[in-house]
Structures are given as C-alpha cells and as structure tokens.
Length: 295
Image 1 (cartoon, one colour):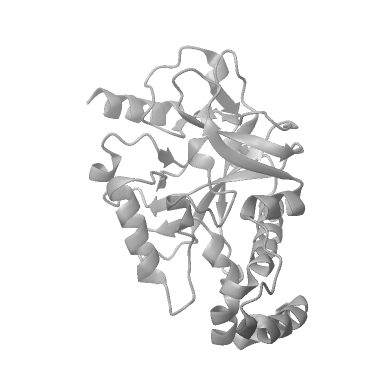
Image 2 (cartoon, helix red, strand yellow; image 1 turned 45 degrees about the vertical axis):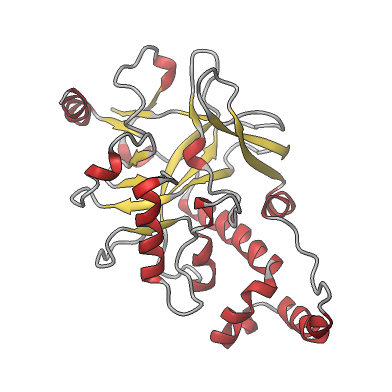
C-alpha cells in the first residue's frame, strides 16, 4: 500500500520512522530531526543512560522493600549488595505481626523526584486533538537527562507484527529495523503480558508489566505518550536506543518496561529512552521528533 511504499522509500533516503502510524507527510521541517550519521544518533553516552536507570531502579527497589522480600529470600545473596536492607528487614520482622506500617513507602513519582530531581505524569496534551501527553509535574529536568522510557514488546524486523499494528499508533521503529509495540490495550497488551509471564522464574520477574495498568511501578515508562512536536511546540526530548548489557542486575529487571517477543533471540534487550534536549521545567509538556533523517 501507500504507507508501505513510503516506508521503503524512506529507508532508501535514510529516514527513520520513530512512530510510523500518525502521518505519511512532513508538512514542516520542524517536525524532522537531522543527524549526520547513524552512529551519532545519541545525545548522551550509553554509560550515562545505564547510570540513570540503575540509580532510579535501586531507589524503587529499596522503597518497596516489603514486596521484595520474596525475591530476597529466593536470592539471599542479594542482601549483601544492599547494606541498608539489614536494618529495614529487621524492622519488618518486628512489626509485621502487629499489622503496623514497617516502612515509609513513597509512590513511584515521589521516588523519581527524590532520586533524579523531577517527576513526570500523563495528562491531557496541550496540543489540540493530540489526546494524552506527558508533563513534568515537579522539579527541573536538566539537559541531557533521561526523562522517560518507551515501553513495549520488542520485535526483530523479521518477526510477525501485522495484526498488532492494525490501527496501532504506538509502533516505534529503531534505526536497525527493530520494532517496539508500546500499545497498552488489545492484542498488544495480551502479547506483552504473555511474554512477561513466560520469562518469569518464580518471584524473579524479567520485565515490568505495571505500565499496562493505572498502577505504575516504573514512573519513567510513559514514553509512548510523548507527542510529536509541531510548528508551535518544538521538540524538547529525543529518542535514544539503548541495549541492556548482560551484567544488568537481575533484581532490577523487574523495572524494565520491555520484553522480547521471541525467547530465542540472543541479542541484548533493546530499550528506548527519551533524553532532554534542553532544560524542562514544571508544567511543561514533553515533545519529541517522530522522524529522524540520517545523512
């Protein structure tokens, strides 16, 4: 069809369709992002992305200790990695019989603010007819900071995604053709849940499925709702691909909002983060470029 032809031509021209279902025309150059070559399509080093994710996930892990007790008992060696757990665990054991609150629990948005200095949330977009958008609710997002993650099932370019893609505006295409389905409804939701349960081993979860619900576990996992920039609203974030290294802590994988469609794929898990192109203050909406041209 016309869209398929356009995508093929786009691949020849070096156009990367970050989200391919919104429009097939570029009415204004401000909705395009230009990078000189494929290797330079990164705003910050992967090491900085990893550092931010580890810092955030560690804070979420420590904050929700009571729910982590099954995992800690399943993998007792983990306790030695977190000295702060000793005091917290003893506190839990002393008061659990009295049904008292053993730990001050912050909601995930508060943990994000306390850890990175800002919080984000989904709300009605400031753009007319744009539906849901993502806003900074508190604090300041410095330039070069990971501000969000794009959740969803990760498909290799040869894997079946036709039925999932019908009427789906949340298909994200990476530079190498890998696709991420960030739809939290319908067949896409069912497939993600199925893959997530498939990879779970006892209490050890290999991905975060809470982004499919209203109860967020990882407050960064709202990147699929970031809207495209316009002539009135310039982009203040951009997409950056990140492959999760093999040494990523196993206890933190429960916060990764991505899962491979096929269990047999040997390559590292592909994630996509959104990085701030400038400082973003409270009340500001996040806007990205859905299209990148690599010259």
